[in-house]
Structure formats: structure tokens, C-alpha cells
Image (tube, rainbow over all chains, first blue to last red; front, side):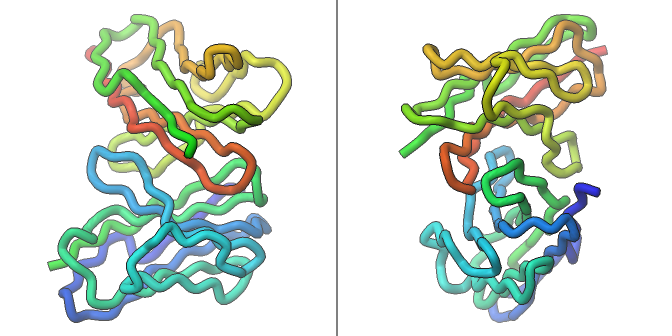
Amino acid sequence: DTEVTQTPKHLVMGMTNKKSLKCEQHMGHRAMYWYKQKAKKPPELMFVYSYEKLSINESVPSRFSPECPNSSLLNLHLHALQPEDSALYLCASSHLTDTQYFGPGTRLTVL
Amino acid sequence: AQSVSQHNHHVILSEAASLELGCNYSYGGTVNLFWYVQYPGQHLQLLLKYFSGDPLVKGIKGFEAEFIKSKFSFNLRKPSVQWSDTAEYFCAVNPSGRALTFGSGTRLQVQP
């Protein structure tokens, strides 16, 4: 099973809202990632968790707050987003330096 | 910093034509190399990968790629494309750690 699941599939939020994106994998992977993908662009790395600890933060604004409550779950908390944050948010997981498997993404629209 | 270049941004082919998509990277050390595909409305899927060994790697759906270390290249090929191959193709590298750097992508359009 190489499945990474993400919820919700679609999310529309106002600039004052607080929402969360969720990601889950049951492959025993100990590295999990958040990427942001704008239309017709490649995914851009946001955060990397390794053994439930944040190991890479690619200078992401603080209105994005990641959380890794356990080895299977990864959350991305959103607060006071801007319209330019509208994008597809992708979660991925891997056995550390091995192949990354991607979820279907959450399509976020910020009004 | 490492970078990945995909020079073909948009490729249009007829069915049964042969395909070659270019990928070059700039990193002098050991790299892991990947090709991912994103079909319309679907998530990124792994086509193939190279970590070590035989530089000619075969992936799913008849795709293959050749790693040429001297040219810092990892080009994707398919001898005969199908309409269902219409998608966005991303080359990616992962030098030593866990973060992938993606190329800008190549949009392949196969006409029936």
C-alpha cells in the first residue's frame, strides 16, 4: 500500500479564518513533507518532518504552522492567509531518503 | 544550490510518436533522480527512479530514462506515446537528504 491520504479535497476560506489540512500515511514512513503547488508550476517544498520533528522549514510565513502529532499524521494549520496562498497543497511521505509518495492534495482557495 | 532544468515546456505529439524529455541537474555529488507524472486532475505519481547501478532504468507504462553522469542528465523516453500519456512530467533530484527539487515541468499533449 503506497497511499497517502489528504483531507479535505477542497477548502475555501476567508482571510480571517483558521483551518487545518490533514495528511495520513500507514506505510511506516518516518519522513513527511508539505509542498505547495501553484497552477502550471512544480511543487515547492515547505516543511519536512523526520521522526516527528521538524527538520526543514523553507522560510515559510508563520501563517502556516505544521504539526506532526505522530508518525502517521501530518497537519498544516492555516491562519490569516492571503489570496496569493491559494494553491494545491501536497503531502508526501518516504522512508527518509527514499522515494517520496504523494497524496492527492488539498486545493485551497483564499477569498 | 541544486537546480533542475527541463528545457521542453510544452510538447505536442501524435499517437505512436517517440518521446524524449530532457532533464539536466546541477549538483556535483551523488544524486537520486526521479521522474514523476501528474495526469490531469490527479496527484503526482512516480514513473521511475535512479539511485545507483544500471544507468538505464525502466518505469511504469513503458517509460524509461537514462542517467548520463558526464552530462548531468536524466532524460525520459518512450518509444510510442498514447493519448493517455497526456500529462505534466516533472524531473526531480534528491542529492543526499530528503528534500526533492523539481524541474519546472513539461506539459505533454498527445493528439489522437
